[in-house]
Image 1 (spheres, helix red, strand yellow):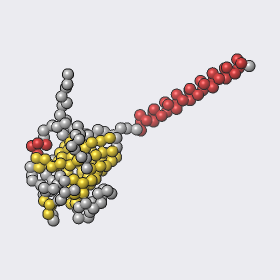
Image 2 (cartoon, helix red, strand yellow):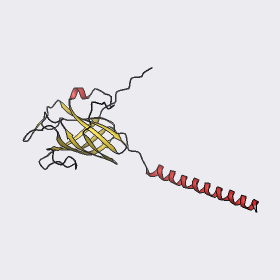
Image 3 (cartoon, rainbow, N blue to C red):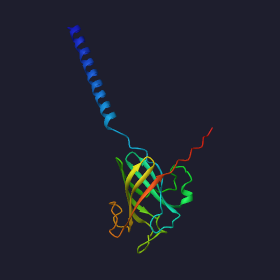
Image 4 (cartoon, rainbow, N blue to C red):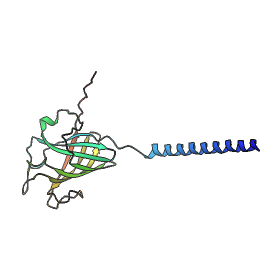
Length: 184
């Protein structure tokens, strides 16, 4: 009896181990075929042209910081000659990412407040501090093409900007990263 019981235990354990290995293989095949990590969006994207109402020499710079599908951003207005200089994309403690949003395959949506357009004049006067902004666009490895809607502070939490808001279609190029300094 002991011999039969012993062989049944061995057969049971072999069947369980085989089932677990088969299940693991099925999950691995599914994951490799269907689950893809989002592309790396971290970096600085500078607009090809000046935003409406801004000086022609100014460029809007969108700095993105990504964690999985969650994206944070900050908008700054910088002179075009400074934008072309490669900079480190490491976030500093001084930067406050005021735009938040999500990445969906080939699509990015950000909303929040910005002071970047404060010096630009638009219909009805200058844009004040803390202007609501919503960004939607497609991200490619070296560019960002989209639409920026900006206006009053209405609806920042919902990602919708007031009906009096202005819209700007733009293309932004990803800035080349500065090579990190090697420390020996």
